[in-house]
Amino acid sequence: MTQAIRFYETGGPEVLRLENVAVGDPGPGQARVRHSYIALNFIDVYFRSGRYPLALPNGLGSDAVGVVEAVGTGVTDIRVGDRVGYLIGPQGAYAQARVMPAEVLIPLPDGISDRTAATLMMKGMTAQYLFRQVYPLQGGETILYHAAAGGVGLIACQWARAMGVNMIGTVSTDEKAELARANGCAHTIVTSRESIVERVKEITAGKGVPVVYDSVGKDTLMDSLDCLQPRGSLVSNGTSSGSVVVDSSLLAAKGSIWMTRPAMMHYIQPRSHMLEMAAELFEHVLAGRIVSEPQQEFALAEAAQAHRALEARKTVGATVLVP
Image (cartoon, rainbow, N blue to C red; front, side, top):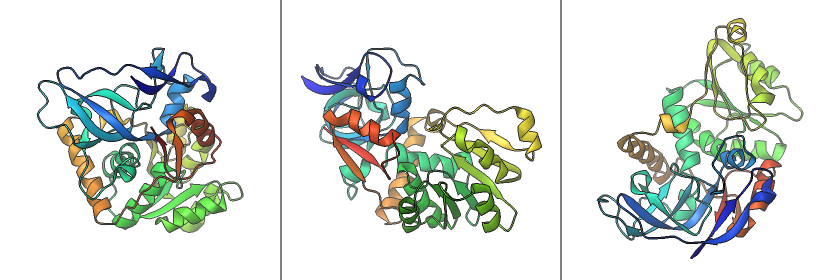
């Protein structure tokens, strides 16, 4: 038996329960992983609250690191004792151990600890696909990135600096602004007291930016559109403040704007490509260009408390659960 978070109905953090569950042996193409750290991501809130449908009862979480305890038949590139992480697969990462499809496991290199890796699976790979695939940055651009002090945001700050990208980041407090700048964000906008559009126009001498990465959604949509140059690109990569609904005529009126709502699943497959993405991310980390550690830790039993902190915007950077 092992312990895992389960929920039987959608709702607030109070629906999360810590229970004893059975973890069997891996079947063909599977591996059993004993977790050392479990990452908390805002998408977990979407599943828990019912914004993203999920068959119930179910587990929660899609992002963790640990060590392989056993492998099933047909598994050739993952071995017992390997340190691995993952970011896709069935929900259920909020657990001490679980059986996973071996094809989604990413071997962790020497030199990157489990604690660091726990911040890199979903968050680091998200920065990779946003900056290197969805709207491929070349270096020299000035961009707008919302929630720059979040888990993905702090990695994005460092990745932008490494590429020579001039990143404007929005944050909610002066403390978060200081943290974002320390991680490489060239300019910060404190949304509680500054106008996003006015500051972007000031920084860019009225030109606006070619791309906005917006994980906030409803509350920032119009500002994001108004910050873009004609024929600019809005990358809507999250909806933490609410869903986004856009009439195509608005995109025309704002300057023939391109808009995309990317999903990791469409950028991370096949497995060979996922491993290439991870290798690029790990190279930055091993070279010291990206430094990432959890800013908050909660015990697995405190998952509900962790969700409350995340939704109240009381966290900065990455948050992990410790089984």
